[in-house]
Length: 348
Image 1 (cartoon, one colour):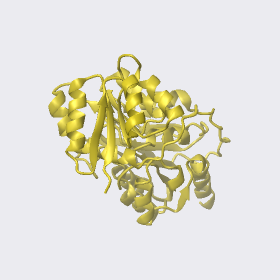
Image 2 (cartoon, rainbow, N blue to C red):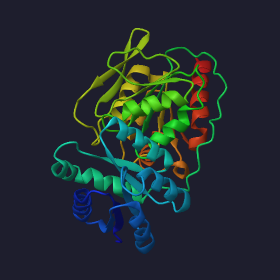
Image 3 (cartoon, rainbow, N blue to C red):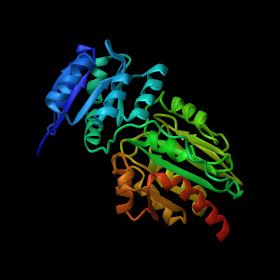
């Protein structure tokens, strides 16, 4: 089997060495070259034609974002960003994902060598996912087509969304067309701490609905979207006529915290047939069992189509499990979600 060929671009000699150790420790991939800056990387890309590029955000001679923008416009390829765990780093990383990067890894703030090697398997998983990702030439996002205001369908209606690799942009595309009268949304996107707040704040500026990082115990309101905080599971709970957010730090599920399965199972219990479940692009099988539980509880369930996914892993597993009522292209998911909610209300 041909190994995944990786090129690392980072101005830190230590990071280049650690990434080389990590990549070469996995039998299905190899580091074919490293570069201290994008200008050298440009020549190495032409020479080696790598399958995946790992790219530092902040570098001399040319900023990582500038290089990524040119790369995705002129020669699209799978890119995994290497980011710092800072508020500035999270903002830059979200810009990189918007420009077309497949995923990102974070540098530990202390114990760099031990921290990077500790996440060796996770980094390798991200490189594998990137190597299979569907990448295309980057074009600036068009202004979202706003959907018509929905009929008021009651506060008991809820939409649950789960995503992983490629999910930040997919979620943006799903949320930005929604009208302010949309039902409440609860969202789990696989992300580390420190990034989910920046992600929520960015979406809040783009959307007609309100988007925020979820807080434990808060009431779930229509016209709002609640994003699970990084490294914390989020569940939906019912108290009388109202829904509330419950957060916990129980062990990871399917190697993830937050876990999509945790969210979907809780929505199946709390909302039953009043819910719509949506599983978007991502690697692995997190969410498949939970989406099936939602469908069995009477919810309408949607899976993103293969041709519109960056990585067709999580939707594929959900479809294989019989969890999806419908398989929908990303462009049509927003409207289908709202139609499903209105259809539920009309049946009642």
